[in-house]
Image 1 (cartoon, rainbow, N blue to C red):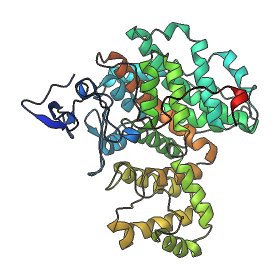
Image 2: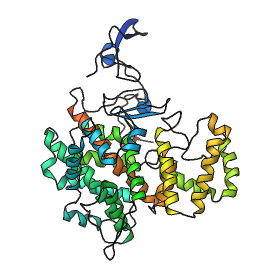
Image 3: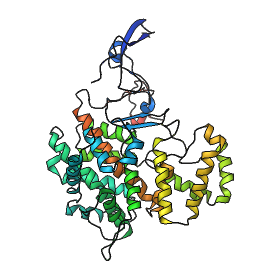
Length: 435
């Protein structure tokens, strides 16, 4: 646990009683100190009120650090830009799970261990036929991932470090397989089994787009783009879905149930649907000659229209992931040589946002969702699969955070408090006497 900052505390006065209170400050390695208020209720009989927990640290973590004001995102101390430029997704997975970058032998073994877990139990195939063909892939993901606990009984003991590791590997390995199967089922094509001779990103693309009747070669530029998308979405500190995984895990729930809960949270349009919203916005604008009209509307605070994929709730400056994604976006478009009106519209909108004084002054720069939506469209990945792909990437962050929570002796079962504003006590009125 973090130590209390030497001789540092926050003095408070409980005005109803006049009691003087003193609460210690706990420093992180970087970032703001936090006030330790664990004794507040006992001292005062009061709770804090913080809707959305935007000013509350719910845990201690060594995994990811974000400074939204400065545009900083680091995993285990490594800036995301350096990881995205120099690493691959498997190396980032190892870093998030184990705390350090692997050496060559460790990386080779880790990749092999993940590869050997990519197949799913054959009976899981039958689960898919229970869903309607038009079921949203995220609905399928929630059901199938939750059901994994019924198949892998040898990795459910959360108090056994080895079983936790096996469950973590299984989840990271099987998520692309489960996701690709959801897509194949929705379009009526046969499932494509994973290939042990392909890397993680290439294997996912192959399972998505290959068919049994002919050879499918994965484009290396698209595989690299997919790998970067996975890296840039691997973890993002205590966001809604990660907090959901931790909260579910705090009850002692098995890892597969916890990750299914994270998928359900991610499905919310305010969380995982941002890149999908970008495509909907581009379709709404429709053509380049209407850009000026919609940009003008976006500047009008009384207009309900908003430019999606610009600015970020956390990053008040520039989304550090966006620069890497922008470069990748242009590489993909150049490789495919696409002539698509929607993609042309997106590139024109990007130019305006990067040069228009209104957007620059308000720091409404294109974010990672703006570029990832364009890349995924260019790769022929349907909009319904965008959030599924997000879940594939975020699984490693979820399991890393879940493992950290299990190993933290200070963690307790989650039990947020509330400000009750309902009726006070009242007497029951029999049915025949109610007006």
